[in-house]
Image (cartoon, rainbow, N blue to C red; front, side, top):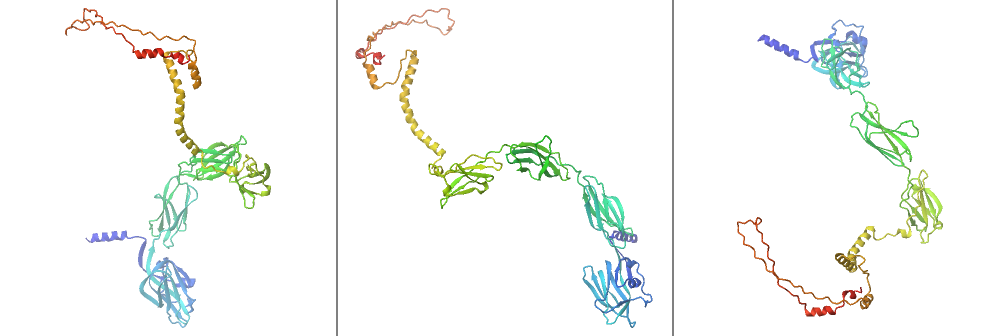
Length: 574
């Protein structure tokens, strides 16, 4: 059982963190070092381990004077905050009598931890003591021979701090850091991805790692090493190296739309994370040699070139620049600008002012010049951007209708003249109460009402002729036999009916009486059901039918009426 307890205690001791190891209570005595360095002395932790005993005979020849002035003091700065359990001093006056001194202890934040006056102190522990200020509270001069501090000898295994990484280029990195201030610190070890890269001394605080692989992920770990062989866990920094530099993909679907004074380019961006921007080059095809000149760069998908001339051929080249500052081969497009169209003056209007002068205004053009003609002669030339001109009443000429006789000729910036434009005045200013659509709609409505009557009148003219044509076609008459059927007046029709013809009067037709003989039907032979209809061997001729004689007798009234009628040919004048 005792062996198990010893083993458990040993494991617990091993599991304790190593960043703070406590030693036995030690003594820090300034002694001759304090006397030699004067009243400003930095105390490092190693003095605890290498403290010397100050209980020796006082050297009356080695001391520091400390007056009672507020400005006179002894300030001691510890390199690292420490823990103090007690302290004492050896000081006498000029009369060799022991004197009390005042000790003020401050922490690393500047707060006062303890203010004690006396020859010694042993009370509560003072933690995180950063600075001690000693003054003389007596009215006489104090001779300070030695000061002793007692505390726990504590070793802090601190890590490095302020680790940073700088890229010198795509594959070289510079690591820099700040080493801990500790008397036990002896150096650092640098690991990359778990492998030891370098062992550095305590005065080295940077390291350059070169020729790293592209598209690699690197973990750097820097551990602190102390003189007792202890290594800290270390500080980690991750560094990612980009992929190998390359150019981005070229743009897609480059299109160009040319006008006489501008060229509009549009394209699609490639799906590439390396794309930085698009470069636009242009070459004016005046010579056979191609010489592209960069005119713009953009992150968009459109570009308008307003520095072109009419009837000129331009060659554009668009390339891409990657995040690695590499440029692609590019895509080219040739464009020819059309000829400049003559300018047109729009919305020209003449208004009469109150004083009788005339104000001529327009909306376009806004570039170039406008030449004003009054009475057909040049009156003035003004800038198109002004969009107006005032013509005095005394200078105005008028047309035969009494309207102002004003004309304008727009002139482009290149000197191209447009056609003459007469502003809207007088009658031309009148607005009709209806438009073309209203006129067509009204005419169609009237036609729906008038058309039936027109068709009815045409039917009286066309139907008789159409009937005559059909009758002659059915009777089979030739074209020469068909008399002309022109329309005659009523008087002409009466003359033709009364005209005596040379042709003899046609006698009435003789009534023919047809006799029909009545025949008696032949008696058929009786058939039996067994005899087939189509396979009879003997066929007897049928007897003829007997008909009765019938005589048609015309009605007396109708016969006399026909005899007295004039033949149709005479009635029609044939």
